[in-house]
Structure formats: structure tokens, C-alpha cells
Image (tube, rainbow, N blue to C red; front, side):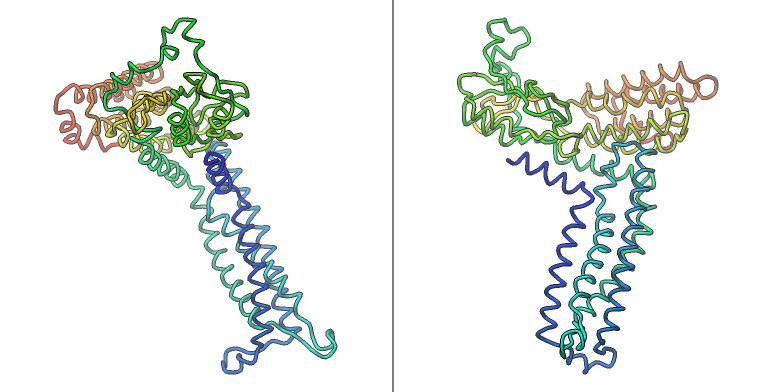
Length: 468
């Protein structure tokens, strides 16, 4: 249930219709409430204010007609401008960034404001009638009319904001910043917590892994499990980790997750493998399936790899021969280095998850520093190697990440990508450009080989801070 609810909230947040619809409904309710209030209060209270006066039916109709007609016209223009901006951004930066623009709250509120003002004026307008039209009794909701004028003034302010917001939002630095901020927040939310808690003694917990889940399991042991198959085809958008752990504890199970958020699953594929199989009845299997929310596209709800891929895609497009914009790639590398630096200083959770009693319950996909480095810097190495500016910043970014590394295996990973970039650059660059890249790579390796590598990197400010 929680997985489906989280998927629904994410869908509504990224939709372009939900906020305008809510604002339109609010406008309908406001119009009804203001007309009802006008029928009780009347317009005699305006006589005490020199800057207010009660409008006659013809004048009130003209005001509301002008406001309503202009608002629906501006709403159409706003929608057209937004679609044009979305098309430009998706073509320039990648189609996967389309959701980022659709979920932008400023665009949603702008469209909703104009539609709400139009609906309000339309509904109030139909309540106005003169004495001739109603058989001797006229009605002009002057208080509602005043609110309509105020809504028109608010709409003008929103239009000014929208004119500024659209070009600033599609600026490449703003696009990258939005993705980078979400990636940093995702790292902060996800680590070190994941499914359950990490065991205090990893080696001891590993000995409790059922034989059926071991790599060298026999044919007989390998059959001692139940397969919980997927019921939908698509990308896993959300996994209710608390529900999975609760079910495992309730039925005394050990679960091995075959897929993680962001993976594509086909109907009938094994979502979860369960041991012992006799403890998992059909109801339990259905509950396990319901813990997975599957949709048509990847989501950043729990999938950090999706945000990394977005930054990689922007950088790769910028370094393509048709675009040739290395400084956009440099900006992506800066945000990737910030994310990986944040990750380098964290203790990543074990893929073996235990419950509150310390019993092994879930075997998840291992999340390692090396795997995320491969997803980010590994994917960009081939693109950056063909450009001197991007190559130098690539090496600087690795140096930035190493400042937060204390574990030897993570430093080894950084050395690995330093060597890989230099190897690829040797094939793509030549002359002065290749010499500069090799010199920078040698400087980084030399610093990393020293026990006080952090001090050496910090002291080399002129080297570390440069982008070229």
C-alpha cells in the first residue's frame, strides 16, 4: 500500500495538471463563497470608503468579462511557452530531464493562477443581473467583483514572475544544479540506512545465509526456495523496505531481492526469492509483490543511479562533436565530484540486512563506492578523454573526491580511473593537449601515493582549483 501511495504522490508531483486542477477547484469554491457572502452583506458597506463604490450590472459585467477573457488568453500563451521550453530542454539536455521541467512548481502555479482567475470571473459573471432581467430586483456581487480585480492583479504579478522564471529555469547551470541538489539530498537520505539495519558482525551474519542462496549451492539446495514473480512490466520506482522487512520477520523468512529501484522488470520475472518456501503462502507472496511499485519510467524516489545518469547524459551530450561544449561537462563533473565526495565519507550499508533481533532477513543488492564511481566517472571517461578541458577537470574532480576518502580501497578506485582516463586520452589527444593531461594525472597519482595525500592536495591549490 505504501509503495503504491508513494508512486502516486510522485506521479502527481511530476504532473502538469494536478496543481492547476486543485487551484481551479479552489476558485470554484471561492466564487460560490463570495457570491453567498455578497448576498448577505450587500454593497452598502462600500459607502464608507471614498476609493470604493458599488458597480452597476453593466460595468461589473465588462470588468469581469475583460479579466476572464484576458486570463484564458494568457493561460494559452503560458502553456505554449512552457511546452516550447520543455521541447527545447529535452532536445538539448536529454529526454529524461522532461520530468524535471514538468514537476517545476513555478510553472504549475502560473498556469493554475490564470485558469483559476478565469473560472472565478466566469462563475461570478453569471450571477450578475439587472432589475429588468430579474423582474425589479438587480444583483451585483461587489465584494466578489473586488476579489476578482485582486486576482487579476495577482495574475499580472505571476506573469512577470513567469517571464523571468522560464529562461532562468532552462539555463543549463540551473538544470544541473537541480539534478545535483536532488542527488546530494538522496545520498543524505539513503546512507547509511537502507533495508533494515546493517549487522554488527558482517562475517558472522554471512555464515547464516541459507545454502540455497550461496554461489556454490548444489542443484538440490538451489531448489529450496520460492519465487515471487512480478505481475507488471516496467521500471521499479519504489520499494517499501519497511514492509519487506516486516513481512520477513513476521513469517520467519530470508528474502533475496533480485531487483532494486531503477531496474527494469518483466512480468513473470523473479522479484524476490524466499527461503524457506513453506513459510511463504500466497497471501505473503502477494504482499511482497505489493511492496514494489512499477511504472513506465525511472524515478528518483529511491534510484540514485537515475540522478547520476542524468548528469552523465548532460555531460556526454555537451562533449559530443555536434555540441562541443566542454564547460557544461565541467559543471556536471563539479556536481558529480560533490556527490561522490559526500558518499566517500559515509559508511555504506551491508547488503545483508538484519531485523531488530539481529536475525538475517534480507539479502539486497550491494551498494559500493566503486559501483557508483563506475556509474559516474567510469561512464564519462570516454567522453572527457577526447577534450583537454574536460580531461583536466575530470582529474581535478577525482582529486576532490580523494580529499574525503580514508579507506585504501576507495583510493585504489580513484587511481584506477586516473589511469583509465590517461589511457583513453593517449588515444584521443596528442601534442600539447596530451602532455597537459599526462602531467596532471602524474601529479594526482604522486599525491595519492603519499601518506599525507590530503595535505598535498590541499597545498596544491593552484592545481586543485583550476578547471583547465
